[in-house]
Amino acid sequence: MANRIRVGIVGCGEVAQIIHVPALKELRDLFDITALCDVSRSVLGQVGASCPGADLFEDYCKLIAAPTVDAVLVANPDAYHAEVVIAAIKGGKHVLLEKPIAVTLAEADAMLAAEAAAATAVQVGYMRRYAPAFLEAVATAAKVRSEIVLARVHDVIGPNATIIDNTSNIFRANDLSAEFLAEGKRALRAKIGEAIGVASGSRAVAYALLLSLSSHALSAMRELLGGMPKGVLYAAQRHGGRFLSAAFDYGHFVAQFEAGVDRIPHFDAHLEVYTPAEIIRVDYDTPYVRHLPARMTTIAAETAAGVAVRSMFPTRNDSFVAEWRAFHGHITRGTRPKTTLADARNDLVLARDMAAKMD
Image 1 (tube, one colour):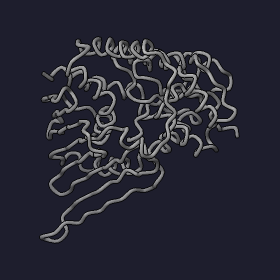
Image 2: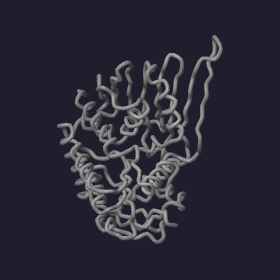
Image 3: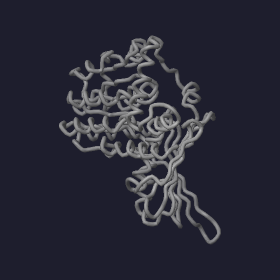
Image 4: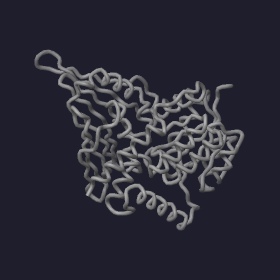
C-alpha cells in the first residue's frame, strides 16, 4: 500500500514489547515494522523473532540509515533520547518519540533546532492526549473555561511491575555488563544535575519522577485547561522525592497537582475540572494492559436535590492506537501534531520550576 509507513524501533524494552509492537501489528494496514535496534543482543533477537522480516541492528545510526525505514520510534532510555531524535531528523526520518522528550532544556532546544531545518513529522508520545474520552473532555471544558473555579491533576500508581508481571511475558536483557548499566545511570544523573543543579538526593528523584510519570499529567493538564499556567505557586516533595504536590496559578483558579508511586498494585490517574454547575473528570487506566479505555465523567445538578452522573468512552481502542493513527495522518498529510517538541518542552519548564521550589 502506498500509504503504509515502514517503522524502525530504537529500544525494544517493555514499552515497545507490550504496547508499541502490538499496536503497530494491529494497524498493519498503516504500518510495517521493518527494523529493530537494541543494545541487548538477547532482547533484539527475541523481539526480532516476533517481527518476521525486520532487520536487526545494535547501532541506531545503522537503523536510521536503512532505506527500508520511513519513521523511527524512539523508545530507548531517557538520557539518550536527544541524540537518537536528532540523528533521525537529520537522516530524513519521521519520529515518534516516547516521553519525556529529554532530560534537559538544552537537549530539547537542540532537537528543536534540528527539526526546524527538516521537513519530517516529529510527534511526542503523550498518548493520554489522544484518548477519545480526553478529546471529549477537552471539548466540554473549552465551553466553560471562564467558569472554572478549581482543577485537580492526580497521578498516584503502584510499581509497574505489579501489573506487568501478571499480564505480560517480557524479554529482559541478561547480557549487559554491570559497567554498561552503571554508565547509563551516571549519564542520567549528570543530565539531571545539568537540568536542576543537583544530581542526587530527593530533589533529583522528584525531578526524575516528574519526567517519567508526571510529564503525561502535566501535558494533559495544559491541553485540558487551555495552556500553560501563569506560574508554580508552590511545590513540595516528600518521602525521598517519591511523592509530589504542587499548585499552578491559572489566574481565576488554581490547579492542584499530586503524584507518587506507592506499593499498591493500582493505577489512579485522573484530571478534574470544577465549575459551579458541572464537574468534568477524565480517568486513565494502566497502559500496560491494552484496550482499557480512558473514561470521561460529568456530574451536574438534576432536580433540586439530586445529581446526574454521565460516564462514557467513545471507543475501546487504546490511546496508543489512536496516537499511531494520528502519527500516520501527519506523515501522509504533511500536518503537524499537537504534541510537538515545542509543546513538550513546556513540561520540562514546569518540571524545572517545580523542582526549584522543592526543599
